[in-house]
Length: 159
Image (tube, rainbow, N blue to C red; front, side, top):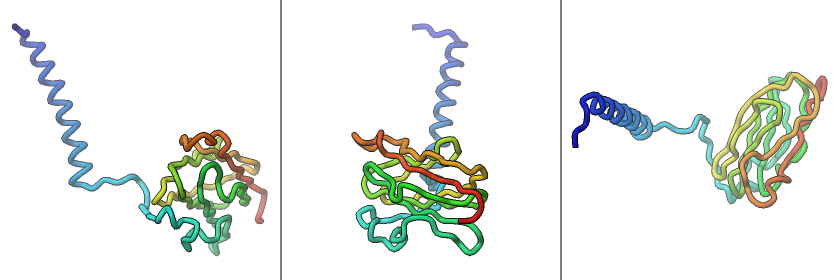
């Protein structure tokens, strides 16, 4: 079978490009130890309910004017289900799952993370506009997934 010179050049070029991409991916994954972007805090998923870090679920005001919200995602609810925070303050959400992978999305904002058993998910954001925000699970977690939602109420001024 005869393959034209230019076809061979394109085939070898495409093969070399694929090999380069696979090599770069393997190098980053194995030799550099790339991990998901997070602080990588782990937790025993069977002990989430008794772990000291999740013993006091809800909103806690910090001395610097920020707030910390500690939550647990479970089939098919968020615990706590309703959160109240003041507008304009930085809020750190800390959560874990006791059963399966869940999603945590604050609809209408860029607040979005996966809640994975065995890991503590954390992100910080501020809400300048008072109002009610819907919190939904955006990762399919079972037959009751559609009923897994919560509410974030951003209030004017301090609590």
